[in-house]
Image (cartoon, rainbow, N blue to C red; front, side):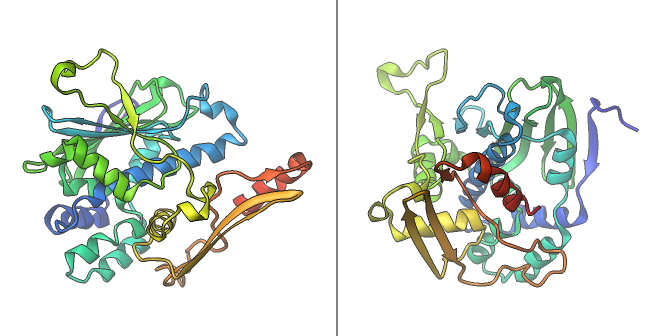
Length: 330
């Protein structure tokens, strides 16, 4: 049996091998979706940290603002997506990056149509967005540490998408996850600052935390400063906090696709603000179609909520425990 800190090589689950083969050899028509999926995963990690920190505030480890950073290195031909969300433990990295739900995989493969553009849009819906990285990268390295664990319990996960992955315990002072994509030949456009800004604005402008891109220096300022400088590319405020008159239909649709992991447009939506003793903002969607696992025996049942904050006047202490039990399904 391997020691906890020893590097070990493991094989992917059979379904993951099938999926990786599909990613690497078939889905080329809409390559850029990989960035949408990795940014969406990073945002989900931040949301999970926010939720767990409601009852375990120590997980915030000092309270540094949550953010996503994207760094391109044209010389090394790498693209890095870094977040300071909940992170992964060693066991979670093995479980989440080496296996996927069999029912979801079977349904994913069954829904393939031969239309590459349509098939690539299924990726987010079936929870396999991480593997889209292999569409443009011939090696993916993940460095992560789960919030609350000591720095000595970070994890490094690495794979070339060829049926195996390596995992080892490392020191990682910061919580969260850093994904390094070693780009394939011919994919250098994804290290271009203009291209990255364009993709972030196209797919991830609705994300409610800052997506930061390292500033590029040209001409007289070509020498980079010792400390990297970052600029926020997206709006970085929650969509439902903005006035309805400022939000386009396309923005409403992209936000729905992000929270529902559904590539199709919603059938309808309503956005309202209620003020009084109880003050809240609601943004409710009706899906355009039933979820793929609606009739699966093991599918989670009940209402799924995506909540940023709730303002309760005069009764916060009494309401919050009930609210948490409702969200957790207790």
